[in-house]
Image (cartoon, rainbow, N blue to C red; front, side, top):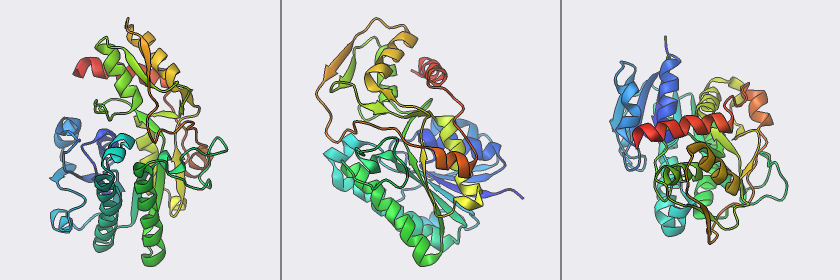
Length: 313
């Protein structure tokens, strides 16, 4: 018999790629999304098959239990507002979705009697650590309400494991990029740079551009995420999920311009409030316990992502 999974944020960038991987791996998947930022186009392949059911629902809805079936073994909780910028503008909203929403998912998990919950957290919980690469044992120190909301979600995961015996795994995603990433002022840096370059608009780098990012392609991220549910030894652990090396933001901009072949320029704007200066994480634990290493290089992933945007713009 196949495995049954619930994916929150299923119509989003990472969530939809996870849905595709789970289905390809023999899972039956229930996907929930309120479609505030997710898109049904991202689930086109999934809805065409017999192994996927979509439910339009909000993770903050107290009555969400009535909208999902009871035979679920795993919950992959990806639904969130994943933007530092939004959290600066509306901290209460981000707390409601990311912290209260996570608690609501855990209440659901307990009611359903699921085997394990995999929580997609963020490297933003570290702030600007003194030592790099940052390990999972580094103290958390949020620089933004977004980071604080993810710390709150992590703490609820720990609490439900300790109080109720629910198996939980926390994944601290670093900078994920790839096809299907929505383009807006709140998007990830790679998406913003690519779309501006394709439109032949100057690339705006926040501050001096010497901030570093640990970029990882989306297919590698969802493979780590699937394994976090399947590997018995992962229970109760926290894992960094990032690339093998870091790259400066100004260099990301330069690589995008070269790969796109655009004539526009790189311009510098003011530093962004809450922006992390250095972001590189040790992924030794994830490699060891989950038995996987990132396979897609930044340059290869960048080319694939640019090709996708060219086709879908």
